[in-house]
Image 1: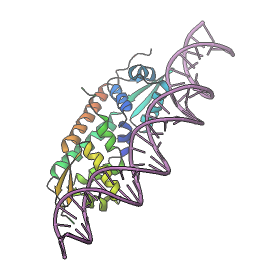
Image 2: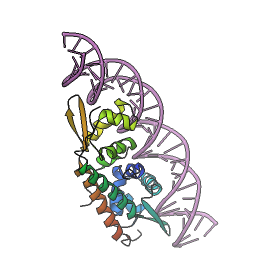
Image 3: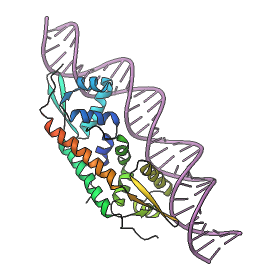
Length: 102
Length: 102
DNA sequence: CTCTCACATCACCACTCGCTGATACCAGCG
DNA sequence: CGCTGGTATCAGCGAGTGGTGATGTGAGAG
């Protein structure tokens, strides 16, 4: 089926700041301090968003001394990409499948 | 670049009902009445969501007598898919790019 | 013409969500 | 130890958002 896209991950990525975090993490593994510098957001706010990303399974944490490093889980993004690709492919063939007026 | 993902489309697709609508429209072109039947939502609510989808450029309208047919724009979904694929690909190579602790 | 039906818009309520400040926790350093 | 710095959690506030009922509009049927 092509309905298996769960909205939780999409909703989480729908926030501009979180998407920026994901974009940054797509380049390199970073800890909260780096993210605070890069995004300009408050530490509390960042930590909050990181919790959301963690609970959505989008990022993984890796403690390193006092620091906490975050890295992306590519499978999640790849899965999203594939599901959107399926929808797009299905949509291309569905243009002429017009259900009759009731 | 891989930062060009605009969150508007993602946010719009982050709603369960809207994603269901998109999934249905990926199969066939439907009008509001059909969508009301399929989703069980109120007509007003549906119309509201369709407006959001329309303004996000995800669907197109096609009047047919008294009925209004909606169909997906596959390019938008394909673009999303590609951008997520880029992020995933970048994330795979970024695992060992760990910035030094400050 | 008038009535009906499909659809859109408006106004309102309730709720959720993001942001913030205060605070607690934990690891290393002296 | 006690202190410092990095992180997580908590409570609260304000703004944005989804759902709903009432109402408007426009095209076909009779």
